[in-house]
Length: 306
Image (cartoon, rainbow, N blue to C red; front, side, top):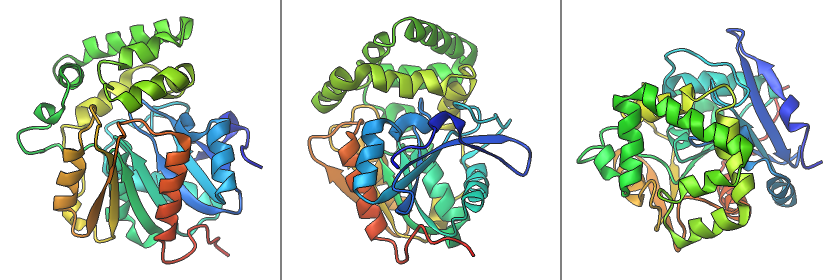
């Protein structure tokens, strides 16, 4: 079975919040928890193409909406440091003891939070196109390559109401015609590889990225833009597990300097440069990275509790 009623999966957390998730690939395969970007959702790697590719590779990929994204209930004032408890609660409900984590873009920090705060549950840690720490050398906003990228974060920081209005208008336009959303991303994603992915998978990408992320409104996507500039609630230096940071050399949204800065601060980390790759990644590339991550695990990450 390669996919399981994607919109119907959810667990109730100890504080009575709902956490929505997808579970694709091989049900008996090695497990990887995948943390989506921003804007993003549990559907980011849950298309039929992704599901089939993970199944062929013998992998099981579980991805949950962060609070307020997609179908997960919001949590006021949350930080990255709050995420590991949600992940552990989901793993417990699935009967999973230990697992690998892979965080994409903004989700990279959430993978590192798990490594720092629940290391006994983690078998391997990876990030893909990860955003760096809020105190990037020279400033986080200035580290972003494009003027449009710097403007979007600055707007979220200084005028969040306006940022929410802009996001809300984009959602309305996307609901009428999803093909308009990839065009809105073009000023941010200038690498030829990204433009090709937008061209070939534009409408599907738009639905997964912005439309599902803002199902409950634009608040969380804008709030995460703001929290990119704030302390995450844990120290990178406290991550003792080995971390692999994959990053496209042509990434025009989050430059590879972010992963290099993370590696400088993490006690045991390695940057893997992806040649001729931007910020977006094809399903087969994500499967290959997840497979590599699982091979790094000291034990089978899908080991069940008894």
